[in-house]
Length: 360
Image (cartoon, rainbow, N blue to C red; front, side, top):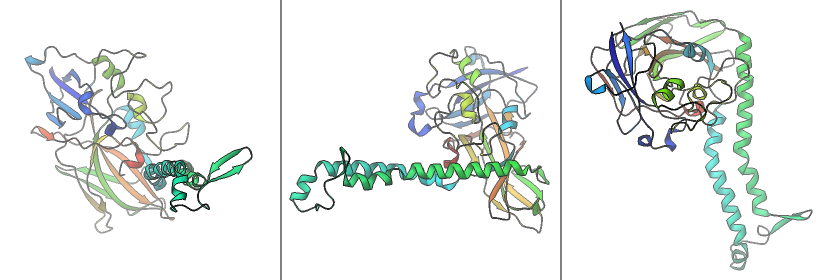
């Protein structure tokens, strides 16, 4: 029975706000059983990194972790990354981009109000702009009365986007569509998809292959770092949430914040959460003749393999359009064979944990 060493420094929810070298690397030895040992390294030693290599005598001091290793799709991926999905409303992204300028506008209006007497005396401001409105016993700066509604625009856009998302998710769930009728053939560097142009009133638009590293299992991470639940978590992790909801980031403790737009309660997620280390192949437009899509695979990635710390997950995404022009996607895992040579990919292709910023 062979052994392997896994080393992971997985990016947290907002990885751009954290120095990678300050996050400890999780190192563990796993038993491979009869599975051939893959050799790959994604990232760099002082950056986000995912490494799987063979065991040597120098690794005798590394902790062992009890984990099954194989190519069978884990249950948490079956629950969260198979089925029909919608894209988050574009207003989510617009709302986020407006936060900084609206805050600057609000601060600037307060600053100008503080120096108004001098600006009026120098003739830069007129009395029609300077001064305050009196409402009851309180006075409100005139500039603030104009700036504050603008300051609330991102919040308004976010509310509208969430209402739209909820409506689209409910419609998607009510439709109760089955799996599209298509077949997949995996080749050496590509995936061939054979599908009909239409399915239950939907028109196939395009497709692509994507691959990423799923979040490590929280229990295994804490065990390797010799930390117990309920105490101070490791850097880059949060305390465990009281109830598991949708986001896989909730499970591993890195989902600090709103990792996905608002979702319909008491059902599976209809917004696909991004893997934070991930690459995508190019979109391939559907052509009715021939009825096949040849999808290029992202380069320098290892094949499919799953353990509690490192899960290399490949999936195919088909994008459909309904009669109203709305786009929905079907996502389904595919199994890619391991390469014979060691795979090296640097730097790690990281993405935001926010679905609206994940470039889906």
